[in-house]
Image 1 (tube, rainbow, N blue to C red):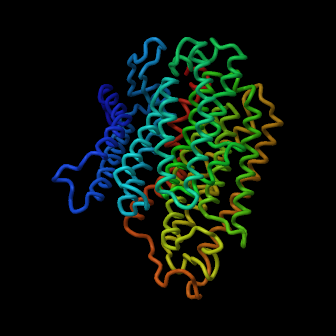
Image 2 (cartoon, rainbow, N blue to C red):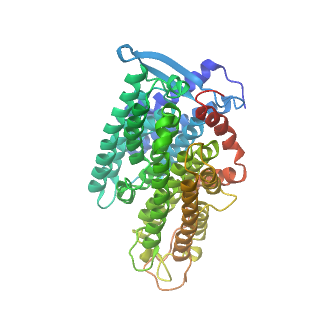
Amino acid sequence: MIDISPSVMQFLLAFIVAAPLLGAVAALLPAPPGLKGKSPEQAVLRHGVTMTGVILAAAIALTLGFDHDTPARFQATTDISWIQALNVRIHLGVDGISLPLLLMTALLFFLCALYSYYKLPEGPSPKAFVALLLVLEAGTLATFAVLDLLLFFLAFEMVLIPMYFLIARWGGAQRQAAAWKFILFTLLGSVVMLLGLLLIGLNSGTFDMVTLASDNGRELTHTTQLLAVLAIGLGLAVKTPMWPLHSWLPDAHTAAPTVGSVLLAGVLLKMGTYGFVRILLPITPGGMRTFAPYLGAFAAVGIVYGSLACLALARNGNKGDLKRLIAYSSVGHMGFVLLGIATMTPTGVNGALFANIAHGLITGLLFFLVGALKDRYGTADLDTLAGATGAALYGRAPRLGAFLAFAAVASLGLPGLAGFWGEMLALFGAFDPAEGLSRPAFLTYMVIGGLGTLLTAGYLLIVVRRVCMGDPKAKSAAPAVLPDIQHYEFAAWTPLVALTVLAGLWPAVLLGLTDPAVQKLLAGGNS
């Protein structure tokens, strides 16, 4: 790593959080004469690529300057008084838990902006599209960087409006209904979450997450912790989404444009699970210990439910939508994340954080690929794409077929790829949960989770067989010439493939960051 002064690190993190908002305002202004080019639309899309690229570069510089010898310590911190009457502060900082999420978020937004430059979804003004994308990026990056409960809530809510409009204005069929369902579910969950955050802040006298984590719930009565976990956990569970609060997700993914689905799966779902780790585990440990068995039960049911729903969609004749199938697969994969958190052990929580990153990379890639298939065929219907009269990607577009097969085997948790480690560590955590938790219950959850991995392999291999195999020379409804991967698609997808392989072969890169921070977090702020 490189030696960067604390003041520069502080500036980098503040820039990463603030720059997307400034970029969003600039996107709505007329382009300077020298930058208009031949097409004003291309100029604003180029602005989106430039801004997200600069933010990614700043995130990489922050990562290089991060002291990897002390990942449990918050670095690049800013702490300024904001609302004195409520003791609310503009408190920013990153540690080994938030840094990987910050970096992945910046990467996915850059790749989505790059992809949209060449393949803008049909809809209103490109200016509005780029501005909404940057506001969405500001909210997600701020969620992983702020260290004040009320600022966390504001950042958490900032993403709702831009995602609503991306679905409602640039989405496909049924986009209005899907967008309303998304906003209603998440807003209702957020109202309850705000009550829980206020309950903690007003009872403890501070909203500062670092102070509250160090106190480890000692200033909060057990009843207060129970109410806070119930309220905050409900809001976070909707965003995760946890079964049975997941029903908004398949509709939102099916209707969203390609980049909307990538960001929804790759970034927005992580905000919910991050809140469980950053807020509930260290600040309300007593309440979490009471609710952990129930959280584990919901997680285990979600794992099997998501897999069974995918198997049903994958069956021949069921008219299953491939985007909807991958959305249901997210319910199962995020179930492993919640199960790891519910164990309240370093092994389980590290597994949850690893699975978060793996899911963001792999499912983001899957949604990119399904979007490309839908662009070529005009549909994501599995029955249309399957068999001799369908895609037969290995014969018609072999590179596209290879990418889809790679993403599928990564998603099913093949050893050597990123999807394996997080799920395995979550199951290991369930094998030996934290003291005070029912081991027989968690052993049951572990067995159910293991069954879920088999079901996951089943439906993903069915998808690969139906979409990639077949007779490329058979009479088909597909275009006579099916374009294989284009240069912009290759540029947007290759980093996700490379990182999936890197995290799978060298998990210590990520675990070396998260483990010391998790150990300190679970110990109540004491290393």
